[in-house]
Every structure is written in C-alpha cells, then in structure tokens.
Image 1: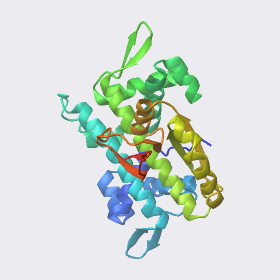
Image 2 (image 1 turned 60 degrees about the vertical axis):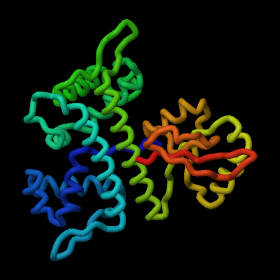
Image 3 (image 1 turned 60 degrees about the horizontal axis):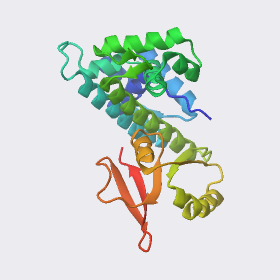
Amino acid sequence: MEIAIPNLRHLRVFLAVAELKSITRASEHIFLSQPAITQAIAKLEGLLGAPLFERHSDGMYPTAAGEVWQKRVSRAIDHIHAATLDIVKDNTQKERTPKNLIALISTTQLRALIAVCEAQNFSIASRNLAVSQSSVHRAARDLERLLGVVLFEKNSLGTSATKAAQTLSKATKLAFSELRQGIYEINALQSKDVSMITIGSMPLARMTILPKSILQFNERHPDVNINVTEGPYADLLHHLRQGDIDIILGALRHPTPADDVVQEELWAPPCRWSLVKDTH
C-alpha cells in the first residue's frame, strides 16, 4: 500500500508547535494564523490516525506518537534543508535563503522532481504519478524558479536531470523514507504494524540465510511486509543510499563502501556475511 506523504507545510507547522509548546508562539514564529495551525495539526493527526499532542493549561506536549513523529520529521526536514543549502550556495539571489525556500517548497513539487528524475521523461513521470503531464511540468518548473537553478535539460533521449536535481531528489527520497518509517512506528505503537521492510540481497544470501530469517521474523511480526530485491552489490548500494531499500545482506566489503552507511558482521569465516545500513 502506498504511504501518503504529508504536506510539507503541515510538517513545519507540527515542528514549530512541538518545539515551542504553544500554538500562539508557533503562529508568531512561522507567521501563520492560529486557526490554520490548528487545522494543519488536525489533518496530520487524521492522516496518522493518532493524537500528536496532549493539551494542558501550560502548553501543548507531544504524545508518544508525537515524539516519534517529531524525530522523523526533524530528520526529514534536515535532509531537504541540507540539499537546498548545497544547491543555492553559489546563487547570487541572497534573499532566497534555504530556510525560506523550505517554507515555499511543496510536497507536490518534490514528488514531481523524484518522478521525472527516475523516469527521465515528463510523460512517463506523469503516468507514474497518475496526474496530468501539464501538472508535472508546472510543479517542476515552479521548483526551478524557487531554487533559481535548472533542474532538467532536454536531450536526444528525453530529459536529463542536472546535478542540482539529483542532489535534491536523493535528499527528498531519504526524507520521504524517514516519514514513512515514522508512520510505521506510530502504527506499531497502536498495535497495527503494517510496515514494509525492503531488503537488498546478494544472490547467495537469498538461497541461504535470508529465507529462514524471513520465516522466523514473520512468526513474530506477521503484519510486517517484507520485499526482497536482488541485484549486483553496486546497484543495491545505490538504492540503499537513495532510500529505496532499507538494508543489504551480503559479503562484507573492506573498506566500508561509503561514509554514509554502516556494516555489521553477522558471522565470521569461512564466509563473512554483513548487514549494510544507511546511516541517514
């Protein structure tokens, strides 16, 4: 089941209330009316199916679900913030700071960005998103204007993503992965764990350790869905760092293949297997 990614503005509203413990103070901080903030929180709670705050006379305090969500949303926003900072650092339009940009960027624009980067074609991207091609074009071009950089260029094969587009797309996929994990964790708190774990498996692992591990895991967590993707290590590592898969099961690599992943040894020789995870 596809997990709906919340509105980016609603996420910023949630963080402001969680940090300031007050709708009034959050309203002054992010320049949004109190009714709009109340409505945004209500929409998030409806989407997540859980209360995010406890209302007390001295302020608003995150519930257990709210604490989980605050951690995940903070990490998601950090991913996007770092990417926008990298993209606009040489931009001469100083009035558009990365912090201000995040307030203007929408989830719709980011979903369009990812779709076009992956499809390398606006028509295919629109079909994948189940929206009109003009909507995808508009979202992508609006994002270009906000950032002040070119994101897509036409070539003989279709549409190519620039370095800026690739940077923001990767950060966005990691951010969306954080949000999905937050939703899974909140579901688990309510004893309705229907999360998805995507495992990247080397061929030999799929025939040995993995099947037995999945069976044992499913006995304890019957509602968790497990998706296994098999492929060459380089491809799996790329998808891990993009947030498409959660872990890789395969032989240890020395040195560690990238500075943003960690390896854990599962057992020693004669065959050294490892679990590789994204540190994001």
